[in-house]
Length: 451
Figure 1: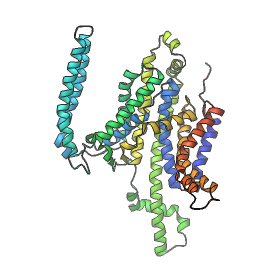
Figure 2 (figure 1 turned 30 degrees about the vertical axis):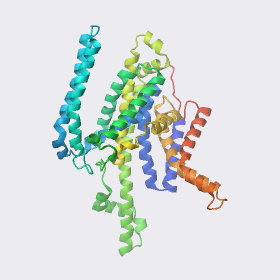
Figure 3 (figure 1 turned 90 degrees about the horizontal axis):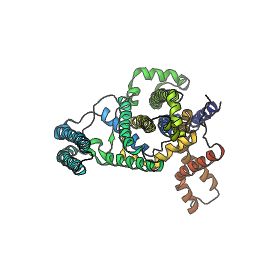
């Protein structure tokens, strides 16, 4: 009942935005709420299931964005000719260096000169990699840098990037987890935050891969384009039938002008509805899998490890192995959400991935919604993103109303109105305080069934 009430209230808030602001704003907010809910589910898998404090969320989301570029953009032929082969050789050198370093480490472990030999192999491999890497990237980035300057992608439908984004994030999480999961919670948080910053920094500076801060625009869509809908006869007929009441009584140019405006408006709404349908399907699939996993013997074992690692390890459970599984699965979900977000935006902008800012927002979603409760993570994603978007206009209206008695050119009034955007941070803090005071488990607390 509590979940039904929470989702009913959320639906009412979105309906209010639909009627008070506009349907376009409401549907745009719905799409971002759906993506936020998926990202919150990924964090809830890590924290709510296993108590892993991951502060590198934006790094894994950025890898999902990279997948959208590498899958959907067409390959840049000139760039591949200029340095594609050298990049391939660089990748082979990099892989060979890692393999050789591991081989030498294992073969010489415990022997004299072990450290020297390992470092020698690593340095030789690094120099060989740099020998091909530098000239290759310079050649690629010099190919029409205003428009391209990168290798491009595979030219496949962008919807495939959602899967690839999850795989990219899962692979990175496996590497991070093998190194960092042995750390205590606070050190794990520092390590994941640092790695997230490294990932974002690489994406900002490696122009040959993602154009860096020049951004990649014009990503293809998995849904129709507005201009194509506006020029199609079937959509025109649908709009004409749907808006028959508005067009009644109009003739000639007046009717055509009204119909043209409605077609333009409804084409945007139709595109947003298509996105909402796709995102809802992904959310339902991931939510269903999360619920089934949490209620399975595997899920009960994970929660037992979370509640008492020492006791679980004494019973023969592979604590570190299960932590690695959880870390990879949660990061994969975040990567999927990151690819979906880039798909919705239609562009990849590495500069917008701000680990400290948006990581905090996702964590607020999980905490407020209910850590350990899958539905709680979903409602938290919806509710917090709604507040994040609406806090600024609501704060501006509130400040304007509170200072209406002041002179129009009052310095205090103008200062308060200019800083209305900071109401977002204030509202987030206030919500956290209220939730921690009155319902510490979140809107939908975790339910532990006696068995």
